[in-house]
Image 1: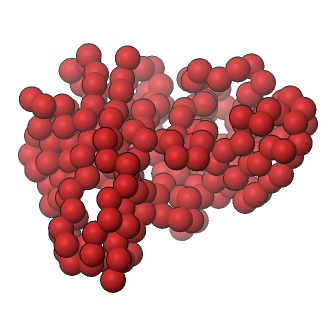
Image 2: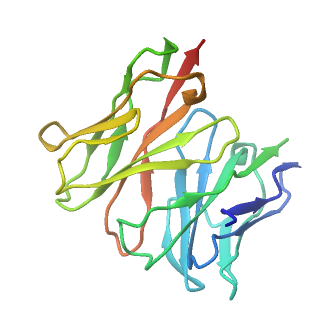
Length: 116
Length: 115
C-alpha cells in the first residue's frame, strides 16, 4: 500500500511569491496534518484537517492556509514568502477521528522549500 | 504548555555498541501519549513506538527498547548492538487531547553509527 505522498519534492521560490504544496494521505485515512521543519529543529505543527474541515491550527501567520478535498488529499498554501519560510514541509495522515491523541501520524517524505 | 527536551544533539558510536537516547517531557495533563520517530536522510519520519501515560511497562522490539518513567517524566530509547542503518535523527514527541491531534516534538538527536 502506498504511504503518504507529497509533491513536489523540492521547490525554489523567491521572496514575495506564493507556493502550493500537495499531499495525498494513506488510503482510508481521513485526517491530514501539516508540519514545518526548519533545519536542525523538530517539526512544528501548522494545521490539521479532518473530513475537509480545519480542526486545529498552530502558531503560524495568516499567510499560511490549507484545505482538504473530498478525496482527503490536501494542499498547503503559503503567500508572500519570506526567507524564513525555507524549510521541509511534512504532511502526515492518521486513521480515526482527529481528536484522539493516541492516533499514530504517518508522515510523507516532505517538500523541501527554498526561498531566495 | 507542553515541552519535549532531547538534550543530546548528536551521538557517535561504533557499530555493535549500545546507545541510549534521552527524552524528557513536560505536561500538566494526566492523559497523554509519547512517541518516537526516526528520520533517515530521505526526510520521511518513520513511526517507532507509541506509549500512553498509564502504561509504564518497558517495551522491547528486537534491538530497540524503551524505558518510560513517569516519576522523572522520561521516555528513553535504547538501541542494542547498533548498526550503520540505525544512523538517523531520532525524535521524541508528545501528544494530548486538544480537540485535535498535534504532536509536540523535541529537537531531535542525530545518531551516527560508524562501521
